[in-house]
Each structure stands twice: as structure tokens, then as C-alpha cells.
Amino acid sequence: MSKISVPARPLPAGRTWGSALIIAGTTIGAGMLAMPLTSAGMGFGLTTLALLSMWALSACTALQFAEVYRSHPAREGLASLTEHYFGPAGKWVVTVILLLFMYAISAAYISGGGSLLGGVLPLSTTSSSVLYALLVAVAVLLGTRAVDGLTRVLFALKLAVLALILALVLPRTTPQFLLTAPQNPALYFSALPIFFTAFGFHAVIPSVTEYLEGNQGELRRAILWGTGLPLAVYLLWQLAIHGLIPQGELLQIGSLDELSAAIAQATGSAALGLGVRAFSALALTTSVLGVGLALLHSLRDVLSQRLPQRGSWLWLGLLTFVPPTLLATLYPRGFVALLGYAGLLAVLYTVLLPGLLVLRARKQGLTKQAGAGPGASNTAVVWLTLAAGAAIVLIPLLTQAGWLPAVQG
Image (cartoon, rainbow, N blue to C red; front, top):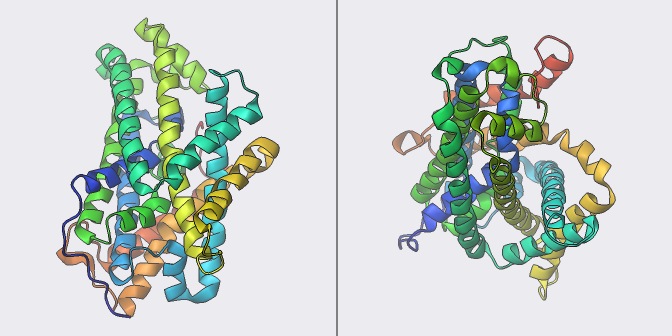
């Protein structure tokens, strides 16, 4: 296979930044606000270390995907990449993992979005979920450029709301609270799978690669900007909450509603709850747009030879949004059970898959070690990421066996 050259002509202005926002918008989900509950017993120091380490792992594995794309057309999806190196069996294993993960996540987002719509419109739960799915489907079917434009607007609003929340919280933080020792240092390891999931965006890499026309430099920039922004947001939010609420009180909080109430009491702002709900709605929508786009492109990658030429985009839209909508409305317990395995599925394709692909590609001489470019990783780093992925898979098992302490969330 010959190396695929990047396009010589420049990309349209702002497309790299738009791609970075698609990555960041997919990454920062509605669950971000509850993350301090997971780190309640860790203290701010270990929380910062955990976030930095999981950001580094997430960005590094994404850059490994980018390296593999040097030797493949930008339009190819993860399943096709896997088929090149591991044959049809590898392709279908990856396809099943990706579809299970993205259908489960999409169903959760559609259910959450339907609940938000149901709170402002006189609709039943089912009707509001279907309407929300339809609105998202229209945006995704209009293409990556439409998702880019909408994400820019929603992301700006999301940051504005978060800035208002932080403006109320940060002036009331107590530096001494940030120096509180961890309840148990082993909580650092227990929290890693949850924190890693908070940096999950890898399914959208094929869409972003195609949008950037395979331009390696711009793709690396989009990945670094798109992961760096969530890291900064997560650190600021953890700083605000760990500095506002003493560790002992934070350990007693069991839900986002309780956390919102505690923040409102500590800041004296009754409007804070409205801000939290607005941020959750915006974060949920930017996430579902990214996941929907990734799912659509994954299905196109797998089914391109099997769909009729006429109306193929409509068939892809139906296959992308009908199954998760049915899961969210008809079988809520089923997709909730599947979400329990979402973290494991995410590790399989976001850590183990890129490492294995890049090692195989280098062995075949299709790519070089990325030592000459930004975001480089040598073979030792690839093996280190694979070991980290295996450890993240084992951590929940060690927690269940009582060898590691359990965290909230």
C-alpha cells in the first residue's frame, strides 16, 4: 500500500478550530458537573494528577490513530483500518464494539435530551425523546460542516454558562480546602477508568480526519486543541468545587442535584441551579452531535457496499438514529445495563486498537515513528499506552474484588 499524501491546497479558514470544537464538544458531556463526586475522597492534588494522566493517554492514542491515517484515505473508518491489518475478523470485532458503544451512548443522550425537552414542552416522555432525536438527526444529516457550525454556537454558549457558574463559585473558594490530604491514595487508581471515559472522543476521529481532508498537521492540532480545552475546563471545575466544599461534606453528597444544592447554599445564589441545568443541556447536545456524526460515518464505512445507491444517506440516517431512539424509549433497562460496559468498550477501541494498529503499520513500513512531528510517540510509548489500557480494564475487577477502594460515581 502506498502512502497517502496530504492535500497541498490549504484548508478553508477555521476548519481546524471547528474540528477541535467537535472533539471538545463530544468530550465534555453532561456528566462533567458530577465529576467532583468521583474525586471527593482524593483531594485536589490527586484529582489533578489523574486528569492530567488520562488526558495524556487520550491525546496520545488519538495521535496514534492520526499516524495510521497517513497511509490511508481520509474517508476510511476505524473498521476499514482494522481490516487492512487484522483482516475481516478484526473488522467485525471492531464494528460490534463501536456500534454497541455508540448506540448505548446515543440512547442515553436521547433519553436525557428528551427529558430536557419534556420539561419545557407539553409532550410525553416518548414524544419528547423522538423529537429530540429528530432534531439531532437533521443537524447530523446536513453534514460535518453543519455540525461544526452548530457546535461552535452551542460550545460558546456552554462556555459562557460555565464562566458565569465559575464567577459565582471561584471567589468563594478556600485555598486550604485544596490542600486536604486524600482519604485514601489508592482512590487515584480507582478513579482512572471514570476519568478516562470523560476524555472519550475517539469515535469521531474518522469524521474529523475526513473534514480536514487528511491533513496531518491540522489533524494533530485539532486533537491537541480539542483535548486541551476539556482538560482546562475539568481542572477549573474541580478547583472550584474542591475549594468551595470541604472534603468531609463533599463525601456526603450523592447526586448532582445534591451538589447543586450544596453549591447554591455555599454561594448564596439561587440562580445556580438554573445555570447547572443549562450547562447540562448544552453539554449533552454537543456530545450527541459528535457521537451521532461518528456513528453515521462508522455505518457508512461498514455498509457502503451494501446500501442502495439511491437514498443511501437516508438509510444511513435511519440506521443511525432509529435504534438508539427505540432503545431509549422502549427498552430503557436494556441500554442502562449496556452502559455499565461502556467504559470497557471505550478502552478497547480508544487505547488498545490504536496501539495495535500503529504497531502493525510500522512493522509493515507504512508509517514512520512520529519522532519528527508534533505529538510524536516512539514505540516504547505505544507499548506504555497499551499497558495503561490493560490496567484500566483490570481496575474495575480489582475494585470489585476489594483490592482497590470504590469511588463515588
